[in-house]
Length: 186
Image (cartoon, rainbow, N blue to C red; front, side, top):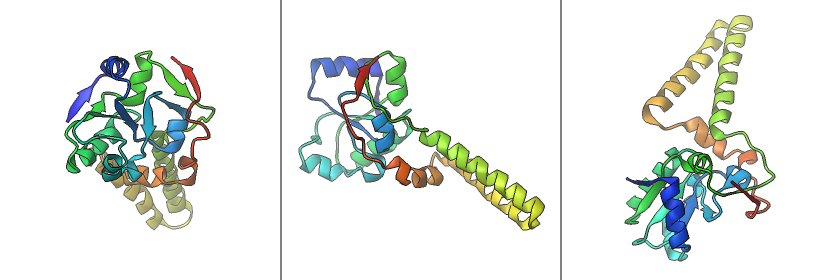
């Protein structure tokens, strides 16, 4: 899988303003902050064939892919490569690295808890609830905590988080951005 640094991508976009940049985060994450040239294509709805057929992206030209930190972008790159895209390129470190590099972004009015933090909140809550139910209701409820712990271990080993995928589809993560323009900031 090919990668590019945020600074290198910024230079390429200045030289080739028509380059295709897709952001595979959720609509709410995109509405909060995004690279100005990036087009929203959430990972769970990414259809490489429609990108090619709509003329949004060409299978023989580079497609730069962003997410929050790079993991979802890598999955999107695999999806694009499997559909015959010759040059899917992941932006190293994603939007967080772009911001850290001091490059311009569009910021919206939406403030959102990142998907990673949402997973931690839900997993921690389920473990805590399992312990309380096991203590006060029935000892078998401790298995809820064990199940969540096993799921977190599985996610860490395989880099596949089912809870994250479910949370990405939650209504609060699906609100359409009210404006893709936002305010530019660096």
